[in-house]
Image (cartoon, rainbow, N blue to C red):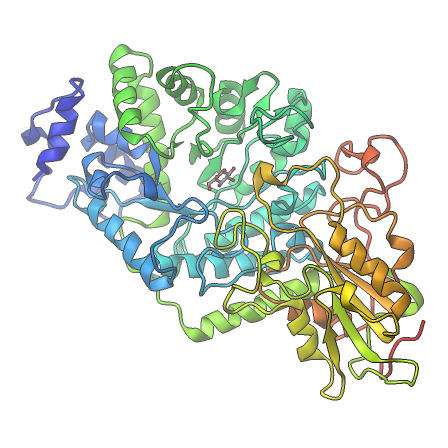
Length: 639
Ligand code: BGC
């Protein structure tokens, strides 16, 4: 029986008051849509035919869980999907608490007349790193450096398994933006600019995430979301519509053939790999936001690329359109958005949608098309048939930890290796000339929060060693060198005596976490404290190794001559040991740059991904990287 409030709200709008009797499902036999043996399309049509306009519109709403006025609103409005925006979590940040929270949401959905389950979305872009107990893999740019498609599949699958344990069944990943401007704050979320790599990795991520869709009932069932459609990586500097940003949420100026040639192929590949949802970007194409572009969303994506799944708008993307919220809704839905990441005003959305339907501003066919696509994804996911949340064992988590370490080791790109200083000896030599064996310094040497980057616990990430199962790069080094070797951590290089001398100095430098436009920069450079660490250690050590932990190549022209070894570790996540594995030769270095490294800012943005803006040579070309051996030396590298 329909709860009173459900009926009441429908009537309150003054737009739709169907007698509750008409909503009652047939009780004699189970409806066709509940029959798992029937083809998905049959089930979709059966369910669609049973739905009222109010129920259909509810399916099109994606709401941030914090913005539910009451959990019962899931039932009252028949909401189709919820999300945890990055950092939005239950009071205790454990798998069990997440699972309880999502189960309580699903229970509300199960109590609606038709019992349509919810999609629950999260940004598990480098593992479900928002939950303290779960695995933090390297960010996508590091995975791109590995050139290892199987690794990407394995990580996507591991992430899906961990997500499913929390009850989340929808990952807002992979990111297929190909960034041509390193000043943009989202470079690290991408697989770089090499198109065929982006295509392969996007496919691998979709396949890995959705590995369980046709599998056993105990498999994790999670949908992937290629994003952001289309051309986000080519937004122009200084065009952001957000006054706080420089590039993000800006304008793509490419013409349609260039957009189609350069940016559409990874989405086409992801569709072929089975993607059922795609997220529209917050960028504009020329003067029009992509969210309102019928041409890009319907003509190209749905008609030309044949996408049968649903298009979800990005965070507040619909209400960011010019016009009243009613007009925005009409514009976006008619352009081809099927589900709206509101993420807040769901009551208003439902009311506006019903009004638009009654006014004839949005047709019944368009609403049916949107809901059909959403239901198709839900049936494909198996949501109606399998409800159990797979349990995560200690063993599985340990295997994922090992996978994270392997990924880090494969992602490190060695850019400079003077006198073959790498690999470093695990048994450090002591000579009378030295006061120390190995000095470790730099702002990220012992900071797992910075090492993990953003989209970890919180949207803008965390700093400090606050991640319970993460290992800092310092700790990774300490665990790797022989027991007779002494590692000295120098948190403040200004405190070092001028008489200090060491065989090796390792300085871990880079960027503090940032997400989206908060990472837009005029000049992507090292912070002053890291430049100070490099210049201070240089005269005190025989071999100076600089490990960069950053979401993008930072300008390093002036510091480079001082450095013997430069290794890019991207944003490695929880496994600092993986960096030590490469430095000390447990594994050879095999990483390669997934985007070119600029010498100076005048070279930005890169044209077509790899040619500098001013035509001069970059510091390191796309694909560059040195291979070092996996055989550790027995004594300290001498300068
Ligand atoms: C980002 C998306 C993300 C969404 C949900 C937006 O701000 O642009 O990439 O998936 O938030 O957290």
